[in-house]
Length: 414
Image (tube, rainbow, N blue to C red):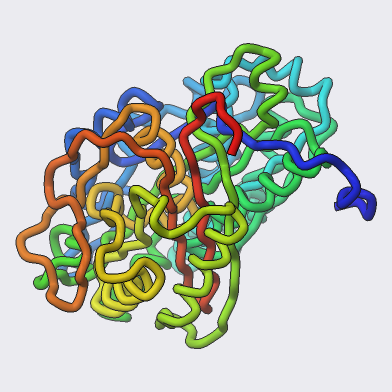
């Protein structure tokens, strides 16, 4: 950001467009229905050869035709993760009631998070070399590998020339990182709008890595359950349109939610194990940045992976911040699987829809809460609720933590 950004007025930042592609629904309407009904996206993996693994259940996006959403780029040369990101961005812009031509006349930002980038294409390159030798490698395929394509391709598809395209690779908290980055840029007036989110495609590399760690569940993901067995890998994309409140009101836009603040930290405590104190510190940073007291928060969307270590650590951190009666705390990964870099972006969309539509999505596949996870995870069925403030947690390997706080927009000042 420029050095004079601190002298600019601080704008309120709102969400006016949402684009979601997930294993439980494509588009806002389907995604909302999937959340409300507690739909499971779990199914046998088909996007790569999973033979040789004792179990191979995942959460794939089905019924996705990139040509439905992408009009200006050759979808054959995009790669799946990039196609998901571009499609979600197109959806979000349309949902916000914006025309790309109008956006191109304004200064903007595109900020997309990812864990794997184009690793699905890398899988295919390695497979072709092992099978047919180096001469069989497709140079067009090699060109898709740069993760920078996730944000750059959005700019190219929408014809946006006055934008900063950024790809953030902070693993499974990347979606929240991009929202924080865009929030600062819009709030300071550095940009007029931001397209923020995350995208990842299912790939053999990531599945095999988690499998070797012993963290892949055989059938379903059961966050906070006493019998939980781990994660299901998933895929998808979520993109949100951020703009100033003044801009949204001036054009009569629908406002899903207001971004109140966020917190980031990186403890580097361990390569894969979360640190309770650091997670709690990140939540406190977010609440402080948002100007929100713990007793004002109505719901927490947890990282909630369904692993033994994460769920206990995150639950304890939540109770350390919120006390013995924390807000209801749900895990969307019970439905969506772990969508890696898209996870907290899709969760931010879910939080916005929960605020707008007045319900709390459930944590499905739940039988009995682990006594070491002392929270109300809203088991199996959604409940109606008037939500004023919602906290969205994103925790990642290496201690990359990111928490975003969202609020309902009522037309009143905070």
